[in-house]
Image 1 (cartoon, rainbow, N blue to C red):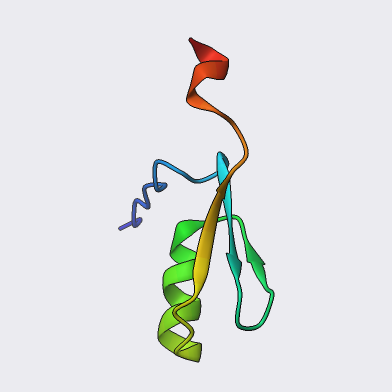
Image 2: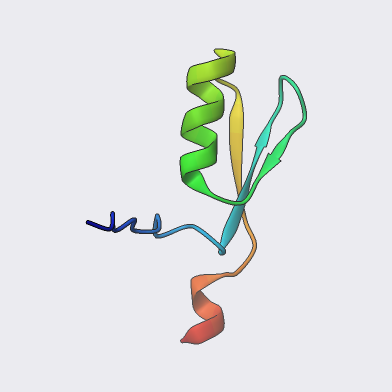
Length: 55
């Protein structure tokens, strides 16, 4: 049986930057994994595409 994985609503619209090690993430699930494995908590979301772009 194949597992279905859903994207986070901000995936591909934002990046997340860890201010503790300066890694950049494109997928929210990677941020969750990074926080869990590294213990880093200072992660900032930077929006790449404004919602108004599609209005």
